[in-house]
Structure formats: C-alpha cells, structure tokens
Length: 225
Length: 321
Image 1 (cartoon, each protein chain N blue to C red):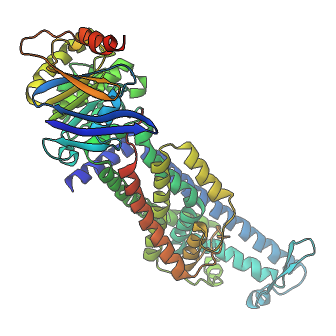
Image 2 (image 1 turned 90 degrees about the vertical axis):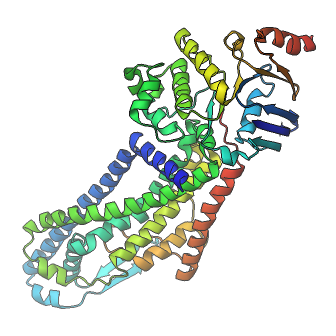
Image 3 (image 1 turned 180 degrees about the vertical axis):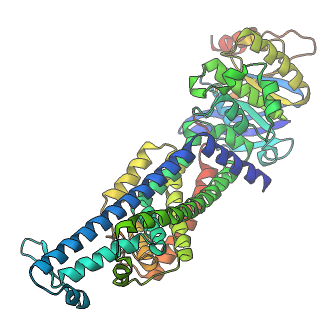
C-alpha cells in the first residue's frame, strides 16, 4: 500500500495539492480522475519523489528509497533515448538486466522485431508508448504508475494491455490516470477525484459496473456547474 | 554497490550504443594525427632551415664546425611599437638546436609527453568540460531522468555517473598515452628515414624532465577528471547543453584570466610543474599561484564539484515535461 499523508505542493503562490491524504491499496487498480491541469501529474511526481513536497509518502510503511527498483512508470510522453533503437531502450531502461529472449517474447506482443530495431526518433507516439509499456511489463514491479497509458495505442494493444492490467491488479499496486474512460471502466477498483487541490475517493463494490464518465460528470463538472 | 554497478553499466552501454565512444575516439585520433603531422612538418622545416643557414655560412667562407661548437646567445629587444626584435648571434647553432628539438619531440622518450601536453592543456579545457556537459544532460534532453530517478535514487545515479566520468578520464588518458606511444615509434622511424645525423642532432638537445611519464599520466587524469566534472556540474545545474556550452567556450577561449586563482591559471601552475612543453605546443599561460596553492585549490574544487552535484541531484526536480 502507498500511504500519502498531508501532502502539499505549491508552485510559487499557486497551491496545487493541499494536505492530500490517501491510501493506494495493494492488489487493486486505482484510478485518478480530474480535469486537465488540476494536478494529477503533480500528484504522480510527488508520490514518485521526482519533486519536493511537504507531507509523507510511504510504500508499505517504508520510504521510497526501499521501493526503488520495484517501481515502474509509464508517462504520457514516453521518455526514451531518441538516438537508440527500441530494443536498446528496453535493454537500458528496465530496472534490472533482462535477457534478449525475454525482451523479444514480451515485446513481440506490441512490436515486430523489425520495428524494435528502428531508432526511437522514427517512432510514432503510439509506438513510443508501446516501448514504455514493454519496459513496465518486463519490470514486473510491485508499484506501477501509468499516466494516459491507453492513448495512442491500437485496438489489439489496448486489448492486451487491459488484460495485463487486470492481472497486474491482482498482485500489485496499480495507479492510473487518464481520460479515455471506456478503457478503464471495467478494470478500476478505486477512484480518486482530484479537484481544487483536494482529493475525494470512490470505492467500486465487487461486481459493480463502474462508469467513470458519469463519475466525472457528477463530481467534476456537476459540482462546478 | 550492485545498484551503483547497474547504473555504471547502463551509462557505459549508452556511451557505446549512442556512438559517443566513436565520436570520442575520432576526436582523439584527430588530435593525435594533427600533432604527428605538425611535428613532422616542423622537423622538415627546421632541418631545411638548418641546411640553408649552413649553406649560407659555407658560401660566406665561415667555419660551420666552429659555429656548431660555439655557444648561441639570443637577445630579445623590445621596440618602440611594442614588437620584439630577436637577435641571434650564432644562427647555425640556433637552427641546429631547433632541428634537434623538433626531432627530439618525435622520439619515444618525448612523443607521448608531447601528445599528452596537447590533449590536456590545449584541447582539454574545451574538450573535457563539453564531454562532461553532454554526459550530464542526455538524461534531461531525452527526459529519461524521470525513469532513471525511480529505478534508484537520483542522487546515487549521479554518484555512479561521476565515478563513471573519473574512470572515463583514466581510460582516455591511458589509452591515448599507450596508443600514441606505439604510433610514435613508427612516426619516429618514418621521420628519421632521410635524416643522416640524428645522433648529432639529438646530442644538441638539453632536456630536463620535470616528472616521469607515470606522474604525467596521473596529473593528466586528475586535470581531465576535474574538467569533466566541471562540465558535468554545469549540465546538472542547467539541464540543457546550449547555455553551459556557451559559458564553457566563452570562459575557456575569450574571458580574461581573473587573478592567480583563476581555474585556468591554477591548471597552468600544475602544467608547468609536471610538463616540459618543449614540443610544438608552447603553453603560453603561466600561473601566478604557488604550486601548493594550486594543488590544494584544485583538489578542493574537485571535491566541491563532486559533493555539489550530489546536493543538486537531491534537491532538483527530476521531472521534465
């Protein structure tokens, strides 16, 4: 479980996160919902300690230092070494040393061997996203963060990713953000709603069919209107 | 330790796969070949000067053998327009010594020292900081810092990167010294093919070694590590190449020396203490600080940069959008 207590983050005078307290549970898929610019990425950055903050964040009761090497993140812009091939990126950016065979086995679900040999600078947005997902898959981490993971993917890749996330949610802490609600509707267990620097939560009961679009309309737009 | 090793190996692989190593080797080769060609050209020119002066003396009925036995005195007179007029009382001996010196530069004894002098003191102040800068910024320019910073703490990643740079400095200096040492043998043999009096020419050279080759390699490694770290620090601070590259070029090429404790001045003190500069590169800069001051200040700067980079790494944002 990732426990966030009284987390605050400001940029100058602008308060983005204000005393946010939340628990991202083990073995579940948690989804963060919010308007553009509301601070979803900031929350992700602070939990991952990529930026300074006030408050406490713990990974199963320990600081992030103990969790390093067991965290994976897929960012919306898929940061990769643009001068290297897809294969080299996977080789260099996985948390641990992974053999060629294992890389090829996982990667083949998303990209052909020929595509993997091409330089990242020649990749499309979707292909870059696929490389980031392959890296996350190979890491097989306990804590997985994905920002807009489905955007840019083709139908087959989305289908595979969805089934992968369902499996991953059974034994990992999965934290997702995004706006393609249809993709997430039937895999999400917990929903956090971020608005005006504050967080509220929404638990999905077992077997309940969730509609993230409705939640968004009611909690974000409804309150505003 | 295992985690540091993984960072180290990743950086090494990136260095290979990004072809940076080939660029580095190409630059080192250009410097070495350039030095070899300049040295050969200088030998040819000085031998030609000597032969011409000798012929003129013979034509004037003067005794060349006696001139070669005699001393040579060089006097520099400053003119009213600030130019310097050099008066040489024994041009035959002077040209003989110059030809001997340019041959000596190519000998196995001096060639490696000469190439190291050029690498560290002529090209080094630009070459090493820019290499360190590139090495610090590629994670930011590719935005991969936000992946590397969750694999292990960014501070430990930066620590491993700094150690990598020091190892790189050792490798560059050693490989360069060994390679130029081997190549130097062939260059010398080529150079003396048409020179009949090599023994006599070399006899006229007075050479006082300032330090052994081993010590020179150690000093070269220290200076190149320091310059690499300097560029690395600017890269960590600015996260981009362009501005710090401009600062490095401006400072190293055109900014005036600001007192005896200027970095360039301190490096010059070390240079003149351990290197002879008797080849085709005459180090014009002479530091005013004492040797011990230079050693202490440069060592302190090395440690300060190393620690500062770790502090910046801890505090800075690791998120590039």
